[in-house]
Length: 248
Image (cartoon, rainbow, N blue to C red; front, side, top):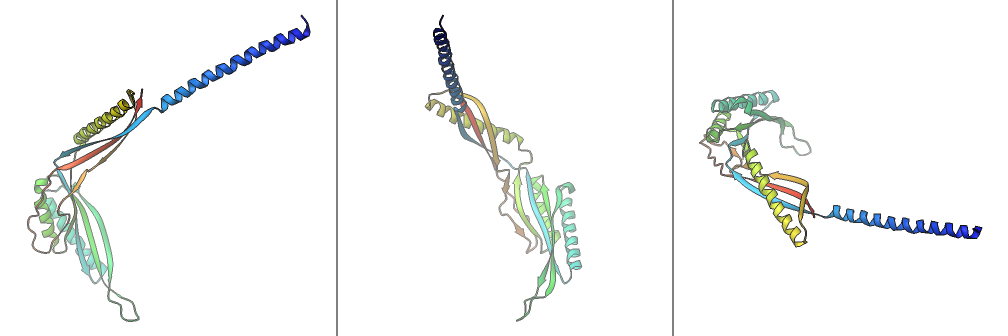
């Protein structure tokens, strides 16, 4: 065979390979593109569930205030008052482990400044507050009244809120309701798109409503303390879940 003929045959063989390889590359590229499209086919929806239950716990801040000409007297008077308040509510049924110091502060008071001058310190205001957890709501009225009586005219009761001490069962119910709501929405979207709903890809949840402010939210003792009306009502717990489903 001549050299020219050998060269021609060699080019033909190389040409066959050159044609086959690009064809294979195109096929693989097409497969990879389809796989990417399949991975991206999903639907993300938000479902919500709401349940309600009777609160079994009440939390409140109880504070006292004293004003005196010097720091030591103001602090000592406040300490005596908050100690009396603590003893009174413990005697009314609160456990000491459910009483925690919330805030202690001392603030100077200033006299009105004279023309061309500045105000001078005229005294000090000391405050001391505790956070109380009442686990038997039926005793809450008696306990708050006892605190107001023991603390005197400068007693402050604030941030009163109801809560459910163990809300695990309610959370399970709300979670199930929210997820079923999300699945129902996803199934509708899948049907509208002509697809079948696939497996769950991601889940993100949010809860709210664990505490419910009481009404009224604060009390001040200006007269002899009478029983404080307490109505817990129903507490709503809302659960929101964001779910991403695959589409088949």
